Length: 383
Image 1 (cartoon, helix red, strand yellow):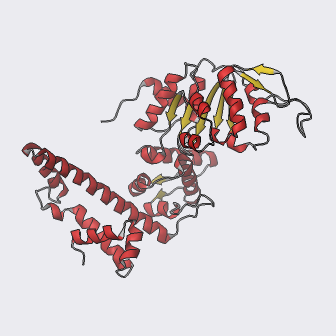
Image 2 (cartoon, helix red, strand yellow; image 1 turned 45 degrees about the horizontal axis):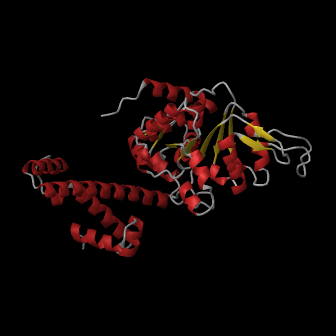
């Protein structure tokens, strides 16, 4: 049963155009709305491209500082040599090129909110300056000995495990605890379920409206493929894929094959991801099917274990019902010959055939160990 979303959260989503109803996303929005009126530092965590930038806006717009300035700073985009000047300002002549005095973001946003995105990228010296602002509200401009004060709320975000960064000496422990008074975890796209399809439709509609093209739609098979894909680039990657489809396949219903042909199967973080070839698309499709089969088998084995542990006739009867539903005629068919086994057997046999019986290559394509492949072959009666 779907959990009812409070009216207040629905209004927040509408105001900021946030798409999705997954429990993890709704919980993150609730935390942001709850902490907004309380002047505490907030740390927003989550993978790159998941939409962390929405949450400091919620905190600012629903807090007491909503009529003051809101400044977003990407700490990873500012060179280390100028980051102190950007954040805290500098005096004329304090370094080469400082032809005049300049206010920093902390002075500009006095009374308001500053969002420090990619806060883990700050140099250790800048981290010390930031800690002082958080603790005392005081800072020094670069090249100045005059202490200035600011009244500011800090919301930080990162896709880095800050506790690990602390252990490795890359992030100050005291600063971590000052920033993380309240932590909001933004979920990755691959755990958001139906939100993936909702976002895809929104991105497709936005593209068609902006560029006056015929809108695309998605087949049921394409939607299922979206749900199974891992989306390593999260919402940002989904938008990129939908924009490409909306451009090159305008006005058509996107099939699963069209989607798989454009999804990057292999991702190298040091280079631009390659678009999947037709062979890679087929491999991805087989991988999705195999992972789904394994997942279903694991769930059934877990149910079987619960029944065996209970030793309860009532529960055993429930398990018989599960087996009945698995059978084609909804009767108590032999559990060893259910459709799941037959589908899994077909996937393995087809993969082995493609590799002329080479079990090592077949196991690599299926992304399982050779030992697991042997065990599966024995269980399913594959010679």
